[in-house]
Image (tube, rainbow, N blue to C red; front, side, top):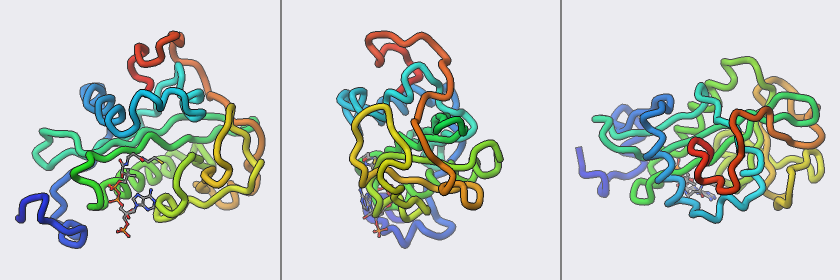
Length: 198
Ligand SMILES: CC(C)(COP(=O)(O)OP(=O)(O)OC[C@H]1O[C@@H](n2cnc3c(N)ncnc32)[C@H](O)[C@@H]1OP(=O)(O)O)[C@@H](O)C(=O)NCCC(=O)NCCS
């Protein structure tokens, strides 16, 4: 196999993917936190989406890591949080991050596909929302929600509010304020210190 820096996305698109994807475990947490920190920096805690994550654990059934095939190093991570929209249980996708040197090989898409498939299989949620770049997330089926259809607990760019239906027509009935689904732990003034929240 070619060295990683010589591989094209095509050469890893078939059976030769040098990474594996599996559910995140507690042992991954430190590496995931470091990767997310590298990708988004400490300023991420000020983002509106983080208000929905404060004090809430990601859904372990829907959060995945990409690791090199030997399992030695973390290459990417996606976490998915439970939320409610109006009174409807839903999911918030992100953060999604891939190690900078390994971007453009399909790892991000693959991580999201695992999260989406696992969420659909659960049959507990009708839709996933996120705040992000539509051209990228459209690759896995997200589309822009009409402005004002759902309301985040803070400012967001309406062009970046995206949704994906896990059940037929689920986006049509999605409406209202987005809130945390539950509180799993006390929220510290220093959110970074809470541990699992990122
Ligand atoms: C965004 C991110 C997760 C993508 O991971 P990745 O493994 O490089 O993505 P993939 O290889 O699966 O997909 C690559 C494709 O998506 C495209 N793409 C990547 N980021 C994009 C963006 N922001 N907007 C539009 N297209 C994008 C690439 O051009 C490429 O397209 P191609 O397949 O047509 O060549 C990675 O760049 C990252 O960690 N960025 C920093 C954190 C971040 O911004 N996360 C998303 C928050 S909204």
